[in-house]
Length: 416
Image (cartoon, rainbow, N blue to C red; front, side):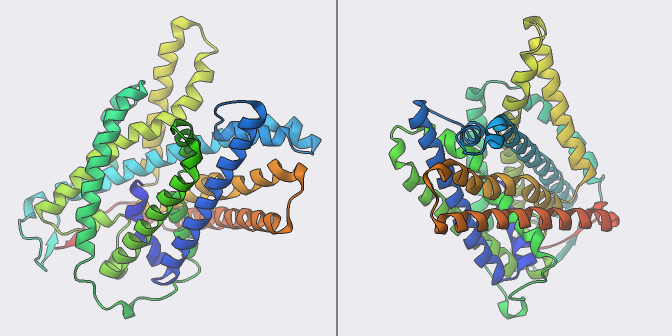
């Protein structure tokens, strides 16, 4: 659970106060089912090949090798490369989202510093003091991010993970208690929003649910993997309930004024400014963890092609180039809602919805698939593909058609 949950109130606005929570429930169920499918297929090939562990990419490769189609068998390695590509795009997309989130929240904290009070219940409107463009805040974070990604030891990063989890949990609890108070009459909100904005909801929602890449590593670390399906179901149920609660309450509380991150709607008092700072610390720490995945995919093949003398310089150069790339992309697209939706539609839908059902069909095709299973897998893949196309098109259309809105305003208003 990362920054995606903070964008869900705006996502619910794009779907409607009734359609949004119902869609989150369905997507949570489907995403959880696809995780179970991946685990079952991986366990099947582990038993068949007598291997203790198999990652996402290798599972897809083994499934293609075992398929009855000679054409798929000869292109099995392409399946593994495709999964690796989408994992890299997804994780670097997360990093871009984090940079935009960091800049937006720090900018608001700095601009509100002079007018920040101890009274969190005032109804006054505070005019924030204009400061530098949010793109400059992104560039200001770059040196810190470079230092973080130069940490190559995963054991060291576990300390950052603990700090991130604590700070984000405290921030989320404080945010939740605020948005649950003083909810106005919900009858003013549309039950179903325009179909044109629904693809943006889809992208943000699937971005939030996309954690399928960590499912197999988690299963591999369990003392007794037989309990993993139950743990996975429980975990996804809790996450889905939290997402529905935060998304619906946030939209009910702020209505059409809801921002791309719910933290940007918090009152201008020291308590909620501290919440934003805690989230900034948490996201900074999480950036290094998200960056570790694409680094482990991209760097080893590159360093294996050079001598041992040049291995470390090549490693560090690639890390520097990748972190600069995420910062450049964030500067080019400084709209948090559109970055969330674009990353979710492009790569998260492929990993979470399109590939797993196709993997199940390929894995069990030699045994004969029941019509029910085949229909289910085809429908889920179609859902993922339609979301992929529509969400990507809508996000790109908004990016190209609203050039002025991509220029962040230097003076904003916040209601206390």
